[in-house]
Amino acid sequence: MSALNFCLDAHPDLASKVLYWPEFSSANYSAQLFTTLLKETGWHQEKIKFWGKETLVPRLTAWYSREEKSYSYSGVVNNPNPYTKSLNDLHQKVEDYTNQKFNSVLLNLYRNGNDSMGWHADDEKSLDPRAGIASLSFGAARDFQIKPKDRSRKLINIKLNDGSLLLMKSPFQEDWLHRVPRRKNSHEPRINLTFRKLL
Ligand SMILES: O=C(O)CCC(=O)C(=O)O
Image 1 (cartoon, rainbow, N blue to C red):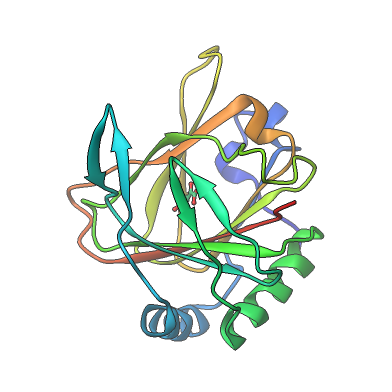
Image 2 (image 1 turned 135 degrees about the vertical axis):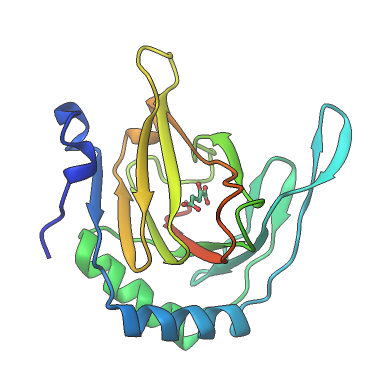
């Protein structure tokens, strides 16, 4: 269960902040989970205000919490759905791998390479600043990019593969931004789950 940091070999200072398990789940198990999550999840497309104008976010999302926690960001309030059995099982496995505790999960569905997530940090006051954020990916491989908030260095690209797990340890969110950029040549869907600990 030891993490592999080959994508960050050139950045030894990040080894204590970002951990990557490329084979958290087997191809078979990932394919099953992808189908289950796609079907079971209460997906919806949020509207956010951007420069005073309402726009649809370029992906579908869903929020689940074990402790009935709501989660707000960018003016969107996510009311909690109760955990399903699949989410419970995944949650347990992710906690075992990462040795961290979470109580909620945000799911993102990228329908194809046109869907994306802009630069941001998961640093809302409602999140426990001592807890990490664990990001689990199924389906199409997509680039995940990180860069320091103070722009002191260039962005770093990490390819998040099907069945992989990435852990952003505390205090990564204090100093770094991340995003999933559009990729015109990616045609397949991807589901990402970020396990979080809300206060
Ligand atoms: O889809 C991903 O890999 C990242 C998701 C993310 O950044 C988020 O949910 O805050």
